[in-house]
Amino acid sequence: MLPGRRGFPADPDLLEPVRETLLGWWTRHGRHDIPWKRLPDGRRPEPGEPLDPYAVLVAEVMLQQTQLAVVLPYWQRWMERLPALEALAAAAEHDVLMLWQGLGYYSRARRLRQGAIQLLAGGSPGDPWPRTLEGWLALPGIGRSTAGSILSSAFDLPAPILDGNVARVLARLTAHPGPPKREPARFWRLSEALLDPQRPRAFNQALMDLGATICTPHQPACGACPWQDHCAAYAAGDPGRFPVKDTPRTIPFQVIGVGVVRNDEGQVLIDQRLPEGLLGGLWEFPGGKQEPGEAIAATIARELREELAIEVEVQEELITLEHAYSHKRLRFVVHLCRWRSGEPQPLASQQVRWVAPEDLATYPFPAANARIIAALQEWIAAG
Image 1 (cartoon, rainbow, N blue to C red):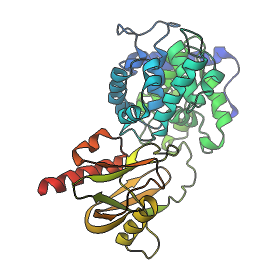
Image 2 (cartoon, one colour):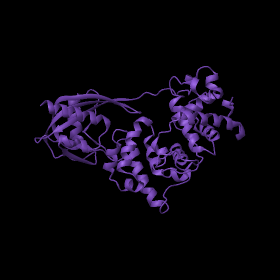
Image 3 (cartoon, one colour):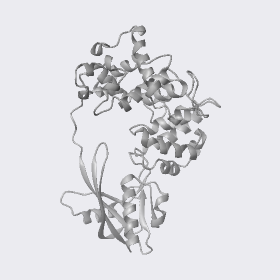
Image 4 (cartoon, rainbow, N blue to C red):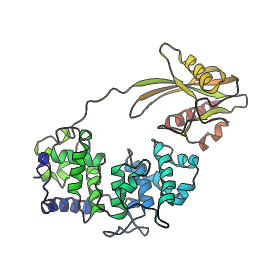
């Protein structure tokens, strides 16, 4: 067995059989139909043969905190609309956000566009792509694991990775006694030690596939695992106990009052969020946080007065919905409102706009607002 808590042996000859076992399993059972891991003619690349770095970059940024099955249709639509780095750099942020709509973490899309501009401005003519970890880390939104995945996937260079799947595999392989996030340096050393320097692209993909399909968070399929004989967590009899979890933190809960404001022409009022932050640059229906002891109708009227300098009549409730982010839970209580007075001003946003309900689909909205739009369309259809 690998000497889990003592670290991996320094002699690469002792690790080679472990690598071979994983790569043999991956050849038979890995996910080989991932489009950005193929050449334009559909072939799997030979060792050392480069792939399209742009296709890999877009995919890897989309895959941050998002599963492969969700990413695939977004990646395909993106590549049809923005097939090259130059197209992304020249695209309007509005169009980029529309293509990203539904993936969440919209700052990733904005940074991807910024990175494209930076690559074209600073790269060599005809080849803007970095071949070093430092070169990729200089781009906005690219961390060490994403950079390593791009270098190994696109160029078959020996760069380790440490995404959630890999950290889980390594924590079980070594039966590590603490949460991986508390000791990132140790896990990076493990990933680097295991990496096959001759076949880094195949090995990193095999490691990710192992975590995604066999060594899953719940009920890992240990009987099908190629590393069962090397796994300290399996030997301990309870692989599901690893990785050790951090003490869960309390996630704050907030109630948000939202106003769907309509004017006499039937248009609705939307505003564009400031560019920074999780949902920066997206459009939304205006509103804000309910204060203690405040009625929700009063919240909506106050927020619209403070943020847009308008007076409204708060009318019937349209929809209530809940949405969870990684750092907070929100309940949106949405009311129809009738605009009474005041010219809308973007006091806390980039811009405001009156929009016909049928045109709302041409604006990028957060997921929760998409459900509000659907409820509004149903209300209008009901007459």
